[in-house]
Length: 384
Image 1 (cartoon, rainbow, N blue to C red):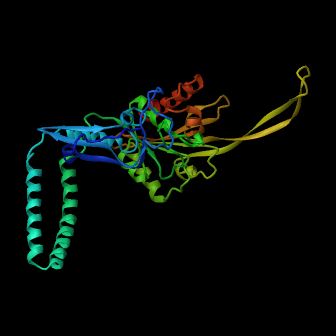
Image 2 (tube, rainbow, N blue to C red):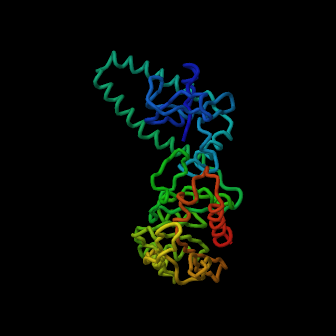
Image 3 (cartoon, rainbow, N blue to C red):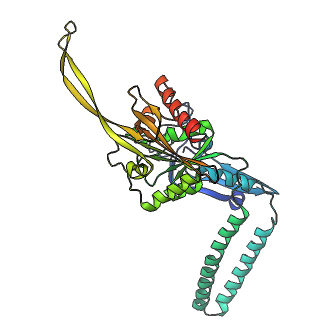
């Protein structure tokens, strides 16, 4: 997000350092004490650096290990579960939780390489150079194509991510059908915050859930306790509907949220199979005209405003007109006793960043009420 850069202190250190992350096409600017966050105005200047810059590195010392990473921001609660940071963090902990052995192995391999280089130089003087170079080329290609997948395999076997030690609720935000953006970067500026649900994503942690982003519905079904689908626009195939039906029967839960602004909604293609529908309604608002501050209001006409509500299912949330804004269908597995749930909520716009604010927003009383509604849906309805 807003990292620093690393530089080795000497040539020897540079030779021993293992580069973990090298930033591509990044800009490095000197810090400043003139601002409270030490960031100066982002402008092109002669003292800025550009290109490939080291942002994370590791080094072994004796039997111990050190990892240097330059962006503590990614370990904060608002970004910990996005952009590959969980795997990175767990991978670093797994790497550090080891003692070095065979420390001399790199020196042995270096010695072998030097010896082979001497042999190559001798061969170049005594045998045809072209023939020797071709042999070197093919041997190098063979070694590279063999060693690269072998090292990758050995790394995966030697450093598996540590398994969870306690149970937790996994909430997957499905992206295949959803048409919203989920970004938690504090520096990101969106001209259309009504389509960003980063705060809703982060706030699920406040009731003990672990959120994640999944590219496909199949991945979400395989990894989650709760699936969240927001403003769906992609069609649901018969295979996907069957997949979700099986998911419900095994105790899975789905939260589907839609909005009147989602003109290409495919929500009913899915929820209609389970006895719930989203319907469009109209509300007539009477309009009045004030000729002056002292005169009475004059009725002019009315304005028709569309909005959506829900029919079918077991109603959860209603307004003062008894119109349904959240409904649920349950799926009981008589064999295992598991209970699956499909919860449908309108209007999703209320849970966008345009209403909930950003992850750094100090909430107003109205936003507190929106947060309470989200916590109710996850804590009282989906998690129980």
